[in-house]
Amino acid sequence: MSDAREEILGRVRTALRNVPDDESPDDVRVERAYRRDSGEPHEAVVALFVERVADYRAEVERVPASELRERVTRACERHSARRLVVPEGVPAHTRPEGVELIEDRNLTHAELDAIDGALTGCAAAIAETGTIVLDAGPDQGRRALTLVPDLHICIVPADRVVGSVPEAVARVAGGQRPVTLISGPSATSDIELRRVEGVHGPRRLVVLVVE
View 1: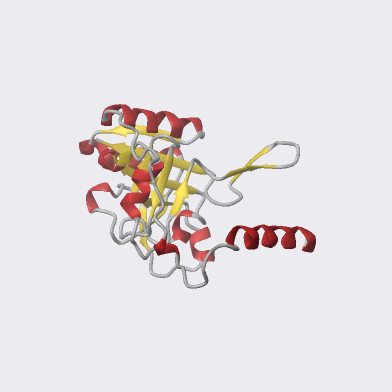
View 2 (view 1 turned 90 degrees about the vertical axis):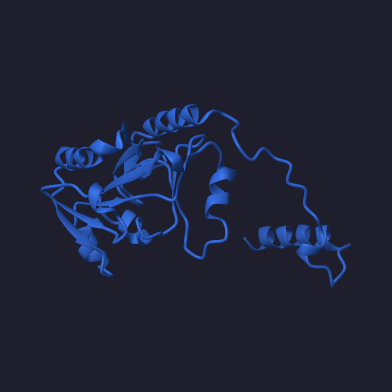
């Protein structure tokens, strides 16, 4: 391990040997000519996002805004979720009926683990990768809400779906809050490539794309 470390550091020193001591990163212009957006019509972008999310074995639906509360309620029924934790910024019209809603007041991990699921919004969503972007905004809450409970119901407004990663980064750039990227339910594979779900987060992810 020590030899590998020294080799890496040696390569860094070699690469920097001609750099003046008083030069800072801002002194060197870096060309960023890579593609920044998908260039696709927004309807195609949303359709691709839905397709990619489904590939990750998440449940995903396109939902008219007028039916959102009903669809959230149905998702809770399908997954036998009777108690949901919700960030304070989740709008009242999205909150399901017949479910105990618990606002996060610095709940402990043990308290979160005893709750059936979490209901949140999102900061952005990426079509190319099927990824949901959370930035701990008022409708998303702290990271623990979407890591500890076994079910995550995420509301994704269609106008927050972008085509590419650079577009999503631009939406959250400059913020001071932590960013979490979610690509499907939590899953990993052991050395024999057997899929195990729920190791690093919720086993079940429901994504409702609101139009």
